[in-house]
Image (cartoon, rainbow, N blue to C red):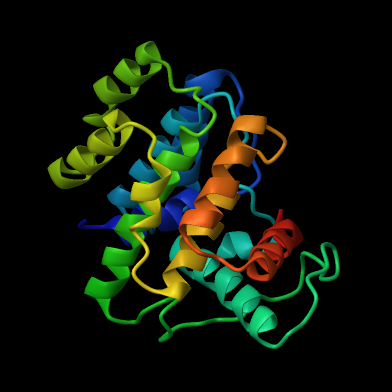
Length: 237
């Protein structure tokens, strides 16, 4: 999907730790403010912010704090999954809170976690956007009325026809954990898809917690790796 990486970058960078204010309208104002503050942002990037506002509605936005918010979306997801993968393979024990939020994330550029080839990066970002949309629906908060409202506003975000079709298809598709798991083509991508989902869902919500458990199983993630992924996300939440 064209500009998928820019959209994903915006989702992470501009709405890292903010909470919704005044529902969709308040989030739209935050998106406008983000555009005003960062003149270099592309149209696709600010559209991504509006997309996040529409999808998350009254929920907390993507969990991210500190220096992680300064990184691009693909870089953040890749870095978290990369570090968790490394620690897991090294046989280290996952410890939530062991690393302060200020600890720099590794830069896995050029690895399967963050490919340097533009087409490969955009392809991976496209699948992570799909993952994000699915995770945003995991608690069932996107009612038919909300779905209609989101679809009616997609055209105003400037995402382009290809992106609109992808997002509409994901919004209208039944929530299928198996289909999302199939988006992963490698063990590294499986870790990233789980990380993206973990960044969006509320683990205290039973439905979303159940979604994560099913996703981990379908992705064939080792329980130890799952623990490391949770610990890494918690370190920047």
